[in-house]
Image (cartoon, rainbow, N blue to C red; front, side):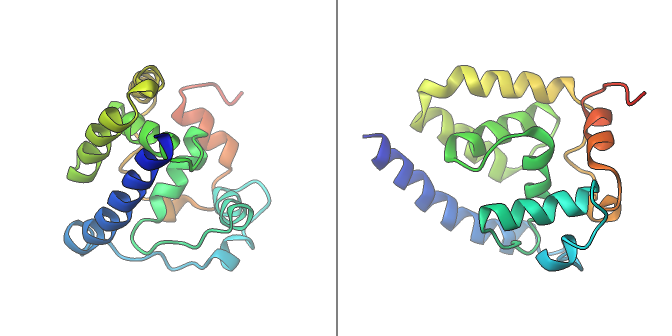
Length: 158
């Protein structure tokens, strides 16, 4: 039964992402970096970590959606469907509001109710963090990744 629920959400996700980009991300420009260029950033930079994320997972950058993958890095949420939903709950807690987010949160709760406690913890985690969901990460790819995470998590870097 869980496999059927997962397949259903993957189908919805694939359809929704395509149209979300066309409708809501028209004015968002694609980043000016490739996966290979990200790997050329300094060792501990956000750019390098993002390049490694793509390489290790066998992923390609999705134009106009690059920031989403940075959210995975910052929050330590994986790419399984339940993690994707938890990430949306975290972003909701962080202040983000979008049709896509509300759809993911709604469907995720209905399709995977057994993860509700995980989702609620993610929401609370997002509320406790510096509001980062709207940052232009392309402009700070050169920043030290760990220091950036510490800042977002409101922890001291000294």
